[in-house]
Length: 256
Image 1 (spheres, rainbow, N blue to C red):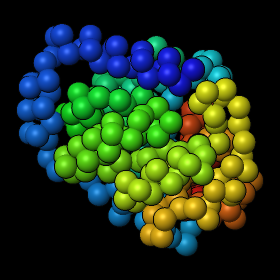
Image 2 (cartoon, one colour; image 1 turned 90 degrees about the vertical axis):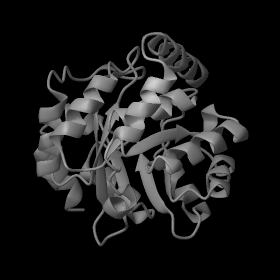
Image 3 (cartoon, rainbow, N blue to C red; image 1 turned 135 degrees about the horizontal axis):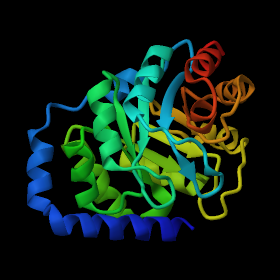
Protein backbone atom coordinates (compact mmCIF):
# COMPACT_ATOMS: atom_id res chain seq x y z
CA UNK A 1 0.00 0.00 0.00
CA UNK A 2 2.78 2.47 0.84
CA UNK A 3 4.52 1.75 -2.46
CA UNK A 4 1.25 2.30 -4.32
CA UNK A 5 0.49 5.56 -2.51
CA UNK A 6 3.99 6.86 -3.19
CA UNK A 7 3.91 5.85 -6.86
CA UNK A 8 0.55 7.53 -7.33
CA UNK A 9 1.72 10.72 -5.63
CA UNK A 10 4.77 10.84 -7.87
CA UNK A 11 2.62 10.21 -10.96
CA UNK A 12 0.32 13.07 -9.98
CA UNK A 13 3.33 15.34 -9.48
CA UNK A 14 4.64 14.40 -12.93
CA UNK A 15 1.26 15.36 -14.39
CA UNK A 16 1.32 18.72 -12.60
CA UNK A 17 4.82 19.31 -13.90
CA UNK A 18 3.50 19.17 -17.46
CA UNK A 19 1.57 22.39 -16.87
CA UNK A 20 3.90 23.91 -14.28
CA UNK A 21 7.56 23.16 -15.04
CA UNK A 22 10.17 22.68 -12.33
CA UNK A 23 11.84 26.03 -13.09
CA UNK A 24 8.56 27.86 -12.49
CA UNK A 25 7.86 26.03 -9.23
CA UNK A 26 11.43 26.52 -8.04
CA UNK A 27 11.21 30.26 -8.73
CA UNK A 28 7.93 30.45 -6.80
CA UNK A 29 9.48 28.55 -3.90
CA UNK A 30 12.48 30.87 -3.73
CA UNK A 31 10.23 33.94 -3.91
CA UNK A 32 8.31 32.92 -0.80
CA UNK A 33 9.00 34.70 2.52
CA UNK A 34 11.22 32.72 4.87
CA UNK A 35 9.61 29.61 6.34
CA UNK A 36 8.48 29.74 9.95
CA UNK A 37 10.67 28.07 12.60
CA UNK A 38 8.85 24.83 13.25
CA UNK A 39 11.50 23.52 15.65
CA UNK A 40 10.94 26.51 17.90
CA UNK A 41 7.16 26.10 17.71
CA UNK A 42 7.38 22.42 18.61
CA UNK A 43 10.24 22.46 21.10
CA UNK A 44 9.58 20.39 24.26
CA UNK A 45 7.56 22.10 26.95
CA UNK A 46 5.86 21.25 30.22
CA UNK A 47 2.77 20.27 28.24
CA UNK A 48 2.38 18.11 25.16
CA UNK A 49 2.15 20.02 21.88
CA UNK A 50 -0.26 19.23 19.07
CA UNK A 51 0.10 19.20 15.30
CA UNK A 52 -3.53 19.41 14.19
CA UNK A 53 -4.35 17.88 10.84
CA UNK A 54 -6.64 18.83 7.95
CA UNK A 55 -7.76 15.37 6.81
CA UNK A 56 -10.85 14.52 4.74
CA UNK A 57 -10.40 10.76 4.34
CA UNK A 58 -7.93 7.90 4.49
CA UNK A 59 -7.48 4.45 2.95
CA UNK A 60 -8.04 2.79 6.33
CA UNK A 61 -11.08 4.79 7.49
CA UNK A 62 -12.68 6.05 4.30
CA UNK A 63 -14.46 9.40 4.38
CA UNK A 64 -14.02 11.35 7.63
CA UNK A 65 -15.21 14.90 6.97
CA UNK A 66 -16.11 17.12 4.04
CA UNK A 67 -14.01 20.14 5.16
CA UNK A 68 -15.35 22.61 2.62
CA UNK A 69 -13.24 25.39 4.17
CA UNK A 70 -9.78 24.17 5.28
CA UNK A 71 -8.75 27.70 6.23
CA UNK A 72 -11.63 28.04 8.69
CA UNK A 73 -10.75 24.71 10.30
CA UNK A 74 -7.12 25.76 10.54
CA UNK A 75 -8.14 28.98 12.29
CA UNK A 76 -10.12 26.87 14.79
CA UNK A 77 -7.02 24.78 15.41
CA UNK A 78 -4.96 27.91 15.99
CA UNK A 79 -7.59 29.29 18.36
CA UNK A 80 -7.67 25.96 20.18
CA UNK A 81 -3.96 26.01 20.93
CA UNK A 82 -2.36 23.86 18.22
CA UNK A 83 1.35 24.46 17.68
CA UNK A 84 1.35 23.59 13.97
CA UNK A 85 -1.08 22.58 11.23
CA UNK A 86 -0.70 19.47 9.06
CA UNK A 87 -2.37 19.55 5.65
CA UNK A 88 -2.80 16.32 3.72
CA UNK A 89 -2.24 17.24 0.09
CA UNK A 90 -2.59 13.74 -1.45
CA UNK A 91 -5.70 13.71 -3.61
CA UNK A 92 -6.56 10.14 -4.56
CA UNK A 93 -6.98 8.51 -1.14
CA UNK A 94 -6.98 11.48 1.25
CA UNK A 95 -8.96 14.07 -0.71
CA UNK A 96 -6.40 16.82 -0.24
CA UNK A 97 -4.62 19.30 -2.51
CA UNK A 98 -1.93 21.94 -2.62
CA UNK A 99 -4.76 24.49 -2.79
CA UNK A 100 -5.76 23.37 0.71
CA UNK A 101 -2.23 24.05 1.90
CA UNK A 102 -2.14 27.47 0.28
CA UNK A 103 -5.44 28.49 1.87
CA UNK A 104 -4.32 27.29 5.30
CA UNK A 105 -0.98 29.09 4.98
CA UNK A 106 -2.81 32.34 4.24
CA UNK A 107 -5.16 31.88 7.20
CA UNK A 108 -2.89 31.13 10.16
CA UNK A 109 0.37 32.26 11.74
CA UNK A 110 1.42 28.74 12.73
CA UNK A 111 3.94 26.52 10.92
CA UNK A 112 2.24 24.41 8.25
CA UNK A 113 3.25 20.86 7.30
CA UNK A 114 2.83 19.39 3.83
CA UNK A 115 1.84 15.80 4.58
CA UNK A 116 2.06 13.69 1.45
CA UNK A 117 4.07 10.89 -0.09
CA UNK A 118 7.13 12.93 -1.01
CA UNK A 119 9.68 11.18 -3.22
CA UNK A 120 10.97 13.81 -5.69
CA UNK A 121 12.58 17.26 -5.50
CA UNK A 122 9.68 18.67 -7.53
CA UNK A 123 7.28 17.86 -4.67
CA UNK A 124 9.58 19.61 -2.18
CA UNK A 125 9.70 22.77 -4.30
CA UNK A 126 5.90 22.56 -4.63
CA UNK A 127 5.62 22.46 -0.85
CA UNK A 128 7.67 25.64 -0.37
CA UNK A 129 5.92 27.37 -3.26
CA UNK A 130 2.57 26.66 -1.56
CA UNK A 131 3.84 28.04 1.74
CA UNK A 132 4.83 24.92 3.68
CA UNK A 133 7.18 25.29 6.62
CA UNK A 134 7.58 21.54 7.16
CA UNK A 135 7.62 18.57 4.79
CA UNK A 136 6.95 14.95 5.71
CA UNK A 137 9.51 12.33 4.69
CA UNK A 138 8.49 8.70 5.20
CA UNK A 139 11.64 6.64 5.72
CA UNK A 140 9.95 3.39 4.65
CA UNK A 141 9.15 4.85 1.23
CA UNK A 142 12.66 6.05 0.35
CA UNK A 143 16.12 4.58 -0.16
CA UNK A 144 19.01 6.20 1.71
CA UNK A 145 20.24 8.29 -1.23
CA UNK A 146 16.80 9.73 -2.00
CA UNK A 147 16.06 10.29 1.68
CA UNK A 148 19.29 12.26 2.08
CA UNK A 149 18.72 14.25 -1.13
CA UNK A 150 15.21 15.30 -0.11
CA UNK A 151 16.17 15.97 3.51
CA UNK A 152 19.00 18.28 2.45
CA UNK A 153 16.79 20.06 -0.09
CA UNK A 154 14.08 20.71 2.50
CA UNK A 155 16.66 22.17 4.88
CA UNK A 156 18.29 24.25 2.14
CA UNK A 157 14.90 25.87 1.44
CA UNK A 158 14.60 26.86 5.10
CA UNK A 159 11.93 24.27 5.92
CA UNK A 160 11.96 21.54 8.56
CA UNK A 161 11.77 17.85 7.64
CA UNK A 162 9.43 15.73 9.77
CA UNK A 163 11.04 12.32 9.36
CA UNK A 164 8.51 9.55 9.91
CA UNK A 165 9.56 6.10 11.11
CA UNK A 166 7.88 2.78 11.91
CA UNK A 167 10.72 0.64 13.29
CA UNK A 168 14.03 0.72 15.15
CA UNK A 169 15.95 0.43 11.88
CA UNK A 170 14.05 3.35 10.36
CA UNK A 171 14.58 5.46 13.48
CA UNK A 172 18.31 4.80 13.21
CA UNK A 173 18.19 5.94 9.57
CA UNK A 174 16.44 9.15 10.66
CA UNK A 175 19.07 9.73 13.32
CA UNK A 176 21.86 9.22 10.74
CA UNK A 177 20.38 12.10 8.73
CA UNK A 178 20.74 14.44 11.67
CA UNK A 179 16.96 14.80 11.86
CA UNK A 180 15.79 17.04 14.68
CA UNK A 181 12.07 16.33 14.29
CA UNK A 182 11.28 12.60 14.21
CA UNK A 183 7.91 10.89 14.26
CA UNK A 184 6.89 7.35 15.05
CA UNK A 185 3.68 6.38 13.27
CA UNK A 186 1.60 3.81 15.11
CA UNK A 187 -0.01 2.89 11.79
CA UNK A 188 1.95 0.48 9.63
CA UNK A 189 1.58 1.96 6.16
CA UNK A 190 2.03 -1.45 4.55
CA UNK A 191 -0.78 -3.19 6.44
CA UNK A 192 -2.53 -0.14 8.02
CA UNK A 193 -2.58 -1.98 11.37
CA UNK A 194 -2.22 0.15 14.51
CA UNK A 195 0.23 -0.42 17.36
CA UNK A 196 -0.10 2.35 19.95
CA UNK A 197 2.76 0.89 22.00
CA UNK A 198 5.29 1.16 19.15
CA UNK A 199 6.29 4.69 20.17
CA UNK A 200 7.15 3.58 23.70
CA UNK A 201 9.26 0.68 22.47
CA UNK A 202 11.28 3.03 20.26
CA UNK A 203 11.47 6.05 22.58
CA UNK A 204 14.99 5.23 23.82
CA UNK A 205 16.33 5.16 20.25
CA UNK A 206 15.60 8.82 19.51
CA UNK A 207 18.83 10.79 19.17
CA UNK A 208 19.59 13.24 21.95
CA UNK A 209 17.95 16.60 21.37
CA UNK A 210 15.46 15.39 18.77
CA UNK A 211 11.82 16.42 19.15
CA UNK A 212 9.74 13.25 19.51
CA UNK A 213 6.43 13.10 17.67
CA UNK A 214 3.77 10.42 18.17
CA UNK A 215 1.57 9.92 15.12
CA UNK A 216 -1.76 8.06 14.73
CA UNK A 217 -3.99 6.34 17.29
CA UNK A 218 -4.72 9.65 19.06
CA UNK A 219 -8.46 9.64 19.63
CA UNK A 220 -8.84 10.65 23.28
CA UNK A 221 -7.04 12.40 26.14
CA UNK A 222 -6.11 8.93 27.41
CA UNK A 223 -4.23 8.29 24.17
CA UNK A 224 -2.37 11.58 24.55
CA UNK A 225 -1.53 10.69 28.17
CA UNK A 226 -0.24 7.29 27.02
CA UNK A 227 2.09 8.88 24.49
CA UNK A 228 3.17 11.61 26.88
CA UNK A 229 4.07 9.02 29.52
CA UNK A 230 6.10 7.21 26.86
CA UNK A 231 8.14 10.35 26.16
CA UNK A 232 6.32 12.14 23.34
CA UNK A 233 6.90 15.89 23.04
CA UNK A 234 4.29 16.29 20.30
CA UNK A 235 1.26 14.37 19.07
CA UNK A 236 -0.09 14.60 15.53
CA UNK A 237 -3.89 14.37 15.53
CA UNK A 238 -6.26 14.19 12.60
CA UNK A 239 -9.36 12.02 12.86
CA UNK A 240 -10.31 13.04 16.40
CA UNK A 241 -10.30 16.71 15.40
CA UNK A 242 -12.08 16.55 12.04
CA UNK A 243 -14.85 14.26 13.35
CA UNK A 244 -15.51 16.14 16.60
CA UNK A 245 -15.37 19.62 18.12
CA UNK A 246 -11.82 20.72 17.24
CA UNK A 247 -11.47 23.40 19.91
CA UNK A 248 -12.95 21.28 22.71
CA UNK A 249 -10.85 18.26 21.75
CA UNK A 250 -7.69 20.31 21.47
CA UNK A 251 -8.35 21.79 24.90
CA UNK A 252 -8.73 18.31 26.37
CA UNK A 253 -5.56 17.06 24.69
CA UNK A 254 -3.51 20.06 25.79
CA UNK A 255 -4.69 19.64 29.38
CA UNK A 256 -2.91 16.27 29.61
